[in-house]
Length: 103
Image (cartoon, rainbow, N blue to C red; front, side):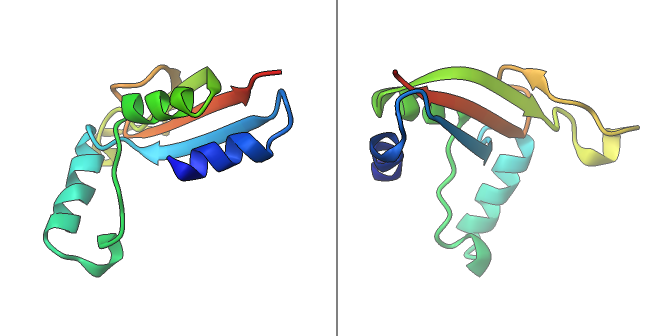
């Protein structure tokens, strides 16, 4: 949360912050979380959030969320071709949120 508050502080009014995450609630996010619980060193310091938690933290820091896109809504082995992003969150493993500092 401190990083989001600092980003808000240093941005100019109307400035944008783009946040990309692996959603903890997705199949991929749960797999990464299991690796952390197993004690794998790469994931030791990782903190996993859901998209909704990130959106709430951005709003609490003062940002206005303008756009949310998601992709990887199915496991990679089920994809016949690369799928493009879709609006919203809750289905995709990779989520990008664009937030703006109020003018």
